[in-house]
Figure 1 (cartoon, rainbow, N blue to C red):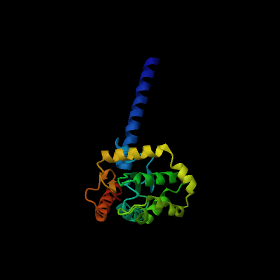
Figure 2 (tube, one colour):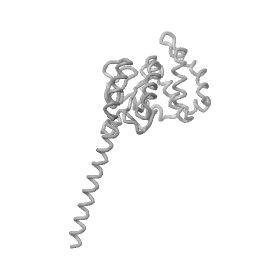
Figure 3 (cartoon, helix red, strand yellow):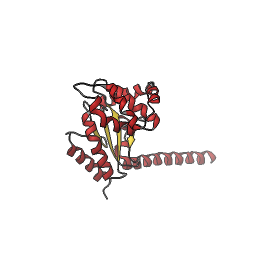
Amino acid sequence: MKYLIFAVSSLVLIFVFVFGSSYYKGQQAEKFGFMAKENAATFVREHSQALGSAEAKVYIVEFMDPACETCAAFAPFVKQMMAANPGKIRLVLRYAPFHDGADYFVTILEASKKQGKYWETLDIMFKSQPYWASHANPQPQRIWQFLPQAGLDIEQLKKDMDDPAIAKRIEQDLADAKTLQVHKTPGYFVNGKPLQTFGYQQLQELVQSELRAMYPN
């Protein structure tokens, strides 16, 4: 009798666990959409820098290059969409340093994380981009004259750039970009859906479509 009770109890616990796990996954899938899927890591890695509420149901994943003029042009536009939909959109940045020497700028950006100045550094990079990233006459070292505007400790930043983990993050992002067939920057995905035709209006329409789907009321 004891064995029967034990067996029944075990089966009940297994059922509860399986049902609970399935229910939780179902809830997560409903709440976070593509982020609950198995391939979510291809879009968002643990090291990925994100802006916006972690509870947001619309994820904009952008493969970017700090030396990319179009990335700089689209940055304020994306932030405007986020501001117009508070708490509903989360921006995740991935790296695709396709321009010559762009790994150098990504390394600076990643090193700035340790001082809690990532977004400030990216903002200064984009604003000063014409001075150091000119395709006709690139002068990468000129970026250093602008970085103090981000409130960075420059000497500490140079030390943090030696972190070998940074190169691994770039390598991972480039591998994911290849998997997702990102060939130029910026490359946008909204809740896992690629921006098929590039443009401001097209990106806004894709974001609005996901907002309507995830926030129907």
